Amino acid sequence: MSLADRRLPRAAPPPSRGVHHLALNTDDMKATIDFYARVLGMPLVHALRVPTGVGVGPGNRGNPPFEILRHYFFDAGVEFLGPIDVGAGTQSIYFHDPNGIRLEYSCQRGDGDDVRVLERWTQTRDEALDELRSLSDDAQWLDAVTRHLPASR
Picture 1 (cartoon, rainbow, N blue to C red):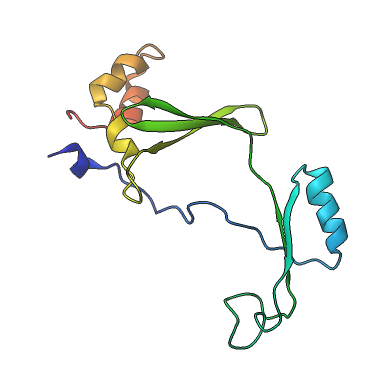
Picture 2: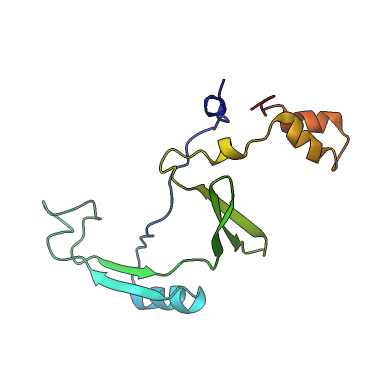
C-alpha cells in the first residue's frame, strides 16, 4: 500500500479555507470604523455602498435584502515570516498568536486542492518513537500517541 493510500483519517473537512470578509450590522458606522481602525489597529482599506438594485430584486447576489448596503474593509493581516522552503516541497509561514506563541502554517507547492502535506511528512511509528523516547519512557503514552502511524513507508 502506498503512502498516498494511507492518509490519516480526519474527523470532518474544515468548514472554510480562509476568511474573505466579516459582515457586521451597526447603527453607528463611524464608531465601528473607529473601533476597528483605532482600537484593534486594523486600518480601513476600502469603503463602498452597494449600488441601488443589488440589495433587493433580481440584481441581488446574495446580499442581505437592504438597499444601499455599506461595505467597509479593514486590513486584518497578521505579521508573518515567510514563505520559507522547509523541505520536501513544503513552504511555511511563521507568526505569533496573542500569547506570543510562534505558530507555523505549511502548504505543499503544487498540491492545489489535493493537499498532501501530511503524507510527505508522516513518519513511520519507529521514526517517531526514536524522538519521543527522549521525552518519556511511559510505554502507554508512547503507544497512545504513535499507534496511528504506519509501520513502513
